[in-house]
Length: 284
Figure (tube, rainbow, N blue to C red):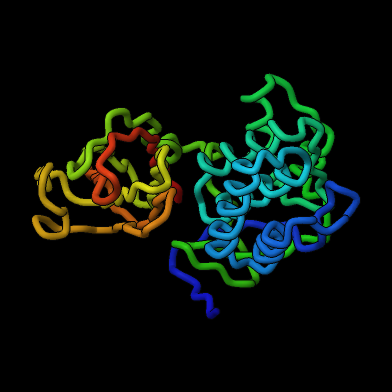
């Protein structure tokens, strides 16, 4: 599959070799092994689909332990490569719930991966089990990593890179603009979440919800789009959208300074109420 470099790019160095955390043994579940291979190859969209399905099936079958933790870990890496730190952190916490002893080392994993993973560990347990590894990673340790550009859902192997954005910027215009729960999602209705970009950059929005049989779509629009009943593209301008048939929904869009409206619409399913979460992050 061809990969196209977009004008706004984010660099992420990812693990390129076989899984290092389980004595480099291949995953027993073929779908988990497939998903890990897709991450290694930079096919993050496919990896998310593969590993999300695999983790759900394993959890339903009550197959817990290190292999499920491995699947969650690489699912988190795929989300991080797509710019969705909030969802990546959630998957890293799922991995730690399966195997609290997981440690990422800078010879196998990129500094940004280790940083977000250790943040997830801190949130889950209030401690860091791999401080030494994370410290070494910040000094640029490790040499077996593949350099990839990630931008707007596309990735390409490349040369010079920008640092992956996030909380490290000294300019407080960037970072998390919105992180909230969405209770009481009702079939056929839209919910509005307004954010203001204080600088030009890339806006990443992720919405997740409880029931995978429900179809919830998201749109980025001007504030003038205020119809809660009708389908947003039919009634107003849409800057960006994500209306796939699986969860979570996510989009990445270049934005200029100013106010924007994120519309979350429960469009399809059995009509039962649902609930979810939303996160919007502005990066350079």
